[in-house]
Length: 254
Image (cartoon, rainbow, N blue to C red; front, side, top):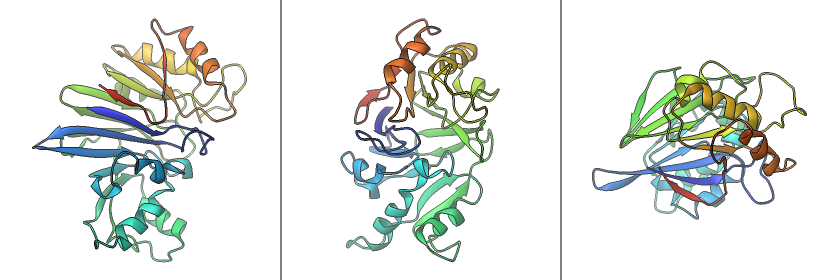
């Protein structure tokens, strides 16, 4: 399994990174399977540096805030108007009502207007789904709207992506035994205290320690106004080894 950080800026696209989008790839049945976790503001452009968007096998939307889903509108144009003709409807797994929300975002009155381009499927808490080599298990997490962390397994490797969340009990089964935890660290410990929205680097580390068996901790979703090194330093006060920072454009072998 390989993870490419397409975009990791928190809450909005930053000066050096799109908003959230993570490309996960694995070999299976003689070809490469491509899974996108979120496709936030600015991500579609950068995604094309790595793959043709028409080669995506599925997208998982952790939640429906624009910094995690809005570039699905651009992908709709790719799907519908590409000069090579229409491709198959792309499976999009997301919270309840994703199709209606994205149609509205594009200015379409019919909630089913994108059904020829996207095959929308609702995520169900702790109910696994399969895409090629990937087993994907969503966990409902602690955010102001319906939101999920996502556990992705393939070839004996586990990636845990928290999406946007504050600390919650669901993070334990999401993270336990993960080879890499990609964790929302939008808040700074001691400065940001709004409950039920995001974690700090310190709370990411504490949560991963409680889960147990986590090999690597990587902080992501850091807004442009934060110093990533402050977030890393706060996490490393609790984490026994080096804490990594998600780097736009980087690819990691898991």
